[in-house]
Image (cartoon, rainbow over all chains, first blue to last red; front, side):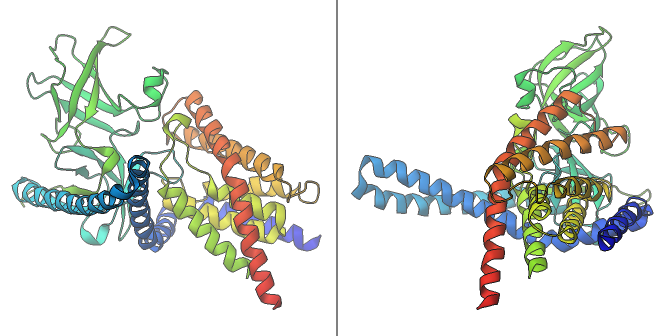
Length: 281
Length: 165
């Protein structure tokens, strides 16, 4: 009975200590956990993607067997070979495009690989990158792909960094239309259903929304939305997405626009962290 | 050996929980494997094991997410402590026990996290969305916790047999 009491009190004391750790100590603790598990996370992602590929091969083969068993064994083999070649070619093309993009970009970019998808607690929409502070990544830097803006870095450890996606409600981007020049704020709709609890919202068909656009602004469907550079986090001119629909806010004070992100956020493999150039550099 | 199995299972649970995509239709809930492991140790082992498991699971969840350090530790310890109160009262071997406890624990922990994070202004989502997420987590907990019970039970059984021989 006595030892149980001791255990309860020790637990309470430890929890209180952890909850009240000074911020640097808490961050160091976090970094330790993340850096320690980063290689395993990388392996887990690799295993899952291989498993996914294997599963798709099996289902394809099963479908084929139901048609003509003998012939389709050979076809499955050929398909697998073609698929392998295609995926290699696709990867090759992707890497070449990334390389060209890096050379062409006016910003200094740090190429990173995505090693983890999503926040383990499921409250934030994030991805984890394989580069951290030792590679020059800092907090609040824009993250992009060849197609457009992905989000911004939030928590950076020595060897990993977390990126808050633009579809997360905590991520706000100062944006504008390149055509007319109207300004607004793009905000993720990923988990909020406060204003539109429709089934559309549940499936995130409108992952982002741009608010506070002047009513006089003429906006058309498929217009591009780019970063305005205001606020300092995101450099000006990065493509955020395209306009999906336009409506007036219920207050009648400004226009709102549903925005489809330009970057394929569901299938991120390689991204770039945009490093802010210091004055004089 | 129990400690080693616990370490292995909690780390693996954290990695799998992070790797499995969230279910959008269930409020973007993730499969609650870590809380499942805590419930297993709360209902099947001594309090010391439950506390250690809750601590480890909480530290991993906090470390790998944007949660403030200690938030999940506290939540898992509280839920493990409450579940541990039922050890000896409920039959941990019955199929309904992990189903009920896993579902309930996942539901309650999600709502607890919502309360803490929303109060701190760290998340911006409505209560209804959080409720949907909690229900989703509960549903996933109903399914995943019996599997965790089975796997951990088998692993511990196998090491026990190996130790005897």
